Every structure is written in structure tokens, then in C-alpha cells.
Image (cartoon, rainbow, N blue to C red; front, side, top):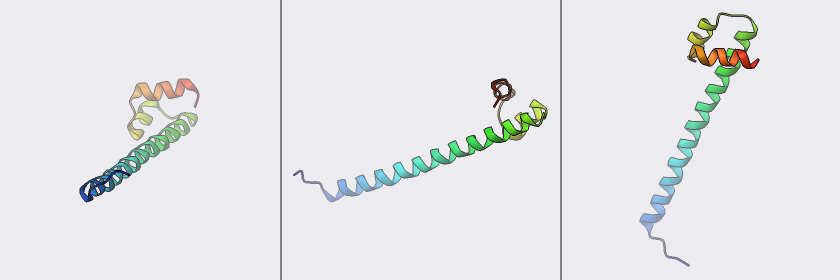
Length: 72
């Protein structure tokens, strides 16, 4: 069994905390993006102007056009 110093134990715990924080942060980003995609798709289905959709969602007009072309 390897000996682990208290500093190594502390560093390991801190690393885990940072990893969890980063994971949560990335998860929130993905969730927000998914929500915006759903909103944009609903707006497209309602026939709203693509420029307006881009402005509201923060996506580029090209991204909105691609989404509209994909039929989502």
C-alpha cells in the first residue's frame, strides 16, 4: 500500500471539488443551449422571422437557418 501524505489527500479532494464544479458548469451550459434550441425550433414552427429568432436566442442567423432546414 502506498503512503499518501496529508497534502496529497488535500490536493486530491480539491481536485475532485474542482472537477465537480466544472462538470456542473458544463452541464448548465449544455442545458441552456438545449433550451434555446427547443425555443428556436418552436419559433420556427410558428413561422417567426429568422432574424428575430436569432436575436432572441443569441444564435447566428446561419445557425437558425440550419436548424430551420433540418426541420427540427
